[in-house]
Length: 154
Image: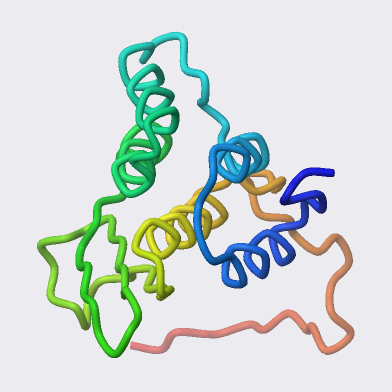
């Protein structure tokens, strides 16, 4: 049984928050459940870098490299250690002031897991939705709809 045996995003988030440390199996499960580009044929250098970092146990570097491969538009905005926890903020617009930016903020006692949790949340937000690009229009008029004639008098 894998560490992340249930593929729902809520369950994945819960398992990440409850984890104590990252392992190679844990990273493989995260990649298989959240990554759309891994392994990337067009970016084989980045893919092999992530694999090497995982094999060497460089979890924080692997998490940042995975973010760079999968979500290049997201960047680490802030990493802060406070009262026994790492706080990670990811942003698409790092140069904007905090109050204007729509960043993702997470925390965990393990630095790599704080980054991975933020990565998974960014991946969830960035996932394409199953909606059409054209809005739907109601076919029948509303019951209170009445045509209105306006006469413009000069």
